[in-house]
Amino acid sequence: SMVQSYLEGVGWGLEQLREAREELREVSLTLKEAGLESDGNTDCVTSLEKLREASVNHRQLYAAVSNLPRLYTSEKL
Image (cartoon, rainbow, N blue to C red; front, side, top):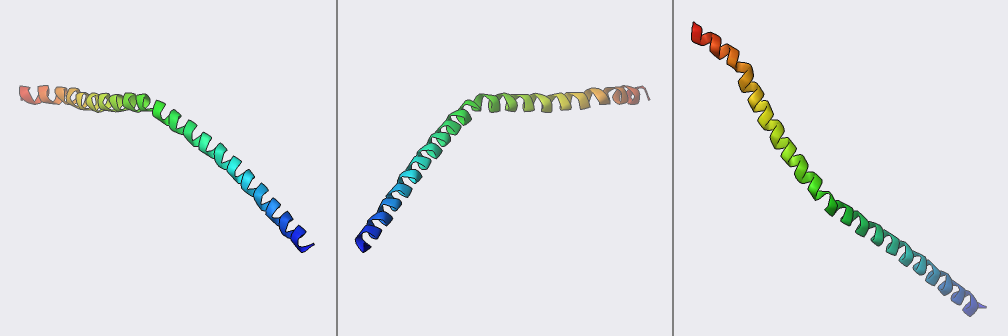
């Protein structure tokens, strides 16, 4: 009776370990898939960096062009 109870406890523990191992496999697979998707995003990040650089250049050019009328007016004075 006591041995039977012990064996049932061991069986239950083994089943819990099997379930945990399967859940870890699923998590590991999901993390691997997320890593692969993340690697695919490097092209997007590079494109965004180029866009950011173009935006900075555009702002600088806009500021320069916006000041041209003032510069032109001050030269006449």
